Length: 381
Picture 1 (cartoon, one colour):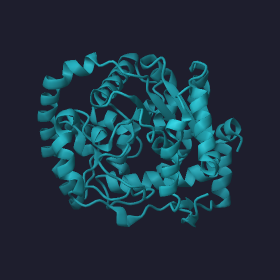
Picture 2: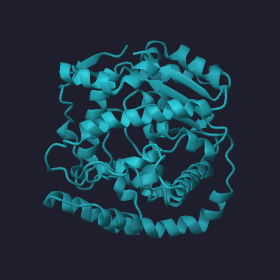
Picture 3: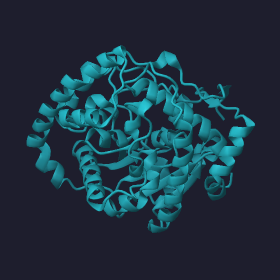
């Protein structure tokens, strides 16, 4: 079991992780039209410092649009015609539930692949720029992720939700661009209230992005984005034979850890870094889990038999080999012996990794237990 350190109960992000002016934010991957649309539809209350950061995005967005035309001309037909070698596997679970750990373990399998940070950053032109742009800009990235000190880099796995943002789709993640304005696009968490036409566009762009990754590496693609937990029925519309693995974790850890994550992302990705605390986040985090797991409880019945495996973070940490072996058996992913050396190597490399330990005030713990009762019940916490 990894050793732990005590974090402050107010879930503060580490201010030393604030990005510099030149450090890429995810919004640097947008095309010009998407970026200008974001500015036009948000109240862009910027400080002088953040105005400089925002100003760097406009010429980069123009650059992105030019190279997007190149990718479309060169690979557009190829992407549309691409046939996936295997249905994708979706890693589901709430933020900070262990989805990153599970993702990292799954991609040690040589027969699996994943969207890289570069591909999610610039989904509109990664096929024509990754070979030269990623190596020449890697120095701009921080060495570690600010929320958990996991190694960062262009070639590391990333959430495809960021790719969808940069493709111009609405997403709750866009709240981190202008965090002082509060939550946005909450209806896109579970897609249920999204008009059918807009939902079909969302599904089409997700499919195109997955196919674009397959153009480079056509193996089973492992996709990990917490919002997908609430979208299973719509993912099955696109990928009827997709496989799913869900991971749960003690909700009394999930809540403060998610609060810390969201504040950290608002600090390092946001364009309003010098403004006050984000008072809206606590209610949004509480509400999101309820929406997510009401949808998941309904949708998991739609998953074909043999295509869903459910794990608990605590079991995975205690005995990763047994849990991954069980998952491979339940999902019929092949011989676990193929992945066992990679699992053992990863766990050895990360054995000194320290997770945060949180102490919730009694009134906050009572609120979490009351609001998140559905989660406690579903996963036996």
